[in-house]
Image 1 (cartoon, one colour):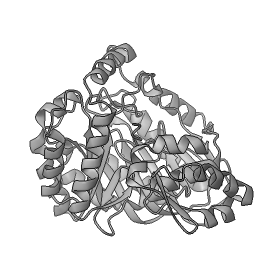
Image 2 (cartoon, helix red, strand yellow):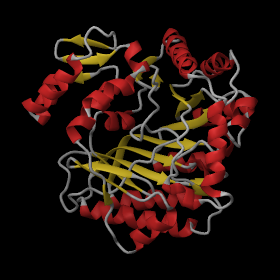
Image 3 (cartoon, one colour):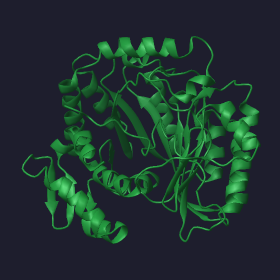
Image 4 (cartoon, one colour):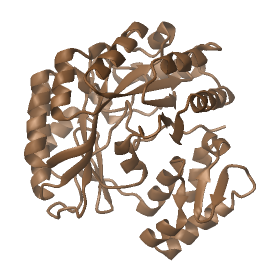
Amino acid sequence: MNLLNPDRFAGSACSAIGGPAASLGQSPRSPISLYVHIPFCASRCPYCDFATAPATSALRGRYLAALGRDIARYGEALGRPRIATAFFGGGTPSLLEPDEIAALSREIRGAFDFAPEEVTFEANPATLDRARLDAWRALGATRVSLGAQSFSARALASLGRTHMPGDIEPAVSAARSVGLDVNLDLIFGRPGEPEGEWRADLEAALALAPDHISAYPLELALEPEEGVANWGGGGWPTIARWRTAARASQPDDDGQADRYELASAVLRSAGYRHYEIANWSKPGKECRHNLVYWRNGEWLGVGAGAHSHLAGQRSRQPGAIRAYVQRTERGEPAIPDGGADAVDSAILALRLDEGLDLAAYGARFGAAARARIDDALRGLEGTGVLERRGDRVALTDRGRFVANEVFVRLV
């Protein structure tokens, strides 16, 4: 059984999205979303494959200056577009100092028409204090995504996390005290995870009544990523050894599927809508920014490891901090990141409970593109993984368990 781990279009621990548009100089015809990557972390979590770097990095000042330069350049090139939603991911954006947050706010407001309906920043539960919260609120933050991961001290230690279970509830309370909505990120299928631990995590999360919950299976890539260059120490061989050992002590595929099914049942019974493969929300509390990704809308991302999608073109920035800083200081464009936009749109739509509207898809990409996707999906009829409602097709609960096996047919 093949569970789908969240791809880079999901904004959780994980939001390595961004890069400039291929059509710089042309103002978008409608509002866009903005992703800003803040890579700094107190330590490296060995399972994480996003562009992160030590908070004490000697490149921190140059990185933030490069980020400001990127923001100004793209704001001008795109004609000062209106920002509909914004997401500050990492890394650990909550590690920024209040003066750094204020400087970032000035740069963004100077470059864009910045009046978004939603602004999210990611945070480690142990790194929130009132001064930082006030600075994020002054920037315009409306919600925080807390990397809780688990309420078990054993599980947090197994993942190399720096916070403790007792940090989570005070962080939720602090966020609410300044009017922020709260998302809790959770990870299941951890190394050595005993029976019952995941259910206890779900119950502990629900006791805090968050507005939104993201729950991901732990998947451990064994190929080095660019961000490895940002850290000293043992480098990739050390990470690879940890991941290999961790893989050996994870639940098997059936165990992962059982945990996913449990999350779906428990959260649904608590009134949360399972609106995306790995995301549940209270009514009206869906992450609007991430919906832009899943609906294959337009967004600009800035920062290391970030991707953009504008005017039907994708691009990215390198994940190595030094490479990103140097490219930005030289004024070099982002790296084209090819892909089939029509296929991407179909896959992303199927991640959502609303599914893929084939009529709208055909209007956007043409009759031939619609026919190709429709034919591929018809080949799955009778398997119990899809349901059709007129022109709309969506994954069933069973289909969500094996989403990769569905998506590969569309490529």
